[in-house]
Length: 201
Image (cartoon, rainbow, N blue to C red; front, side):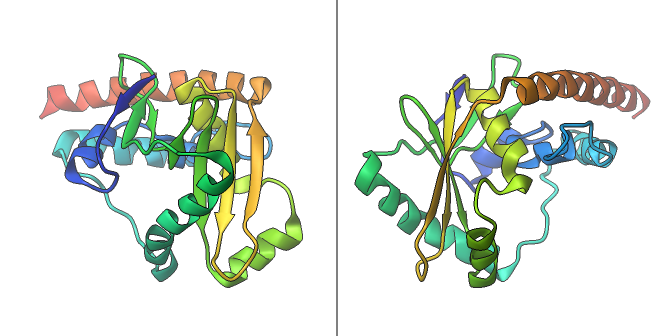
């Protein structure tokens, strides 16, 4: 695990993750439920290759609640720290010295990481009714454990008008074995395509 101490959302942070797969997008490489290679992998790969070639981040749509979520994240982290102690905020984490895979944790502690989702009231109600880990975020949470090597990850869903949802997710060895295999396949193909295009330019 190689930690880059920068502020998330800054240009330095964007450059750290430019052109490489990150855990927040691992659902485009491995499916949440069955752990299969995702049909979205090729499109995601091409987006990353474009970033590498242009040196520019391919920004996506940000909804009103995604913007609001950024503002509420500090409040959610403060709520978490009351019972769990100080949380280290970091910018970006590479898995190893190859720097071809990474994640942006919302917090790190000695024995676990933290992922915070600040959601709209309607989404919060849905998560409360469903109970358990939110399936769509399994690749991100398991992927963050893969990148950092940590054995557990706390998943916090927060809205100030509701009781927060806090779930401790344990490392899933079978799922991570598939993720590692798919990432190797993805990065090999990504590198080959990138090199081919560099030679053609």
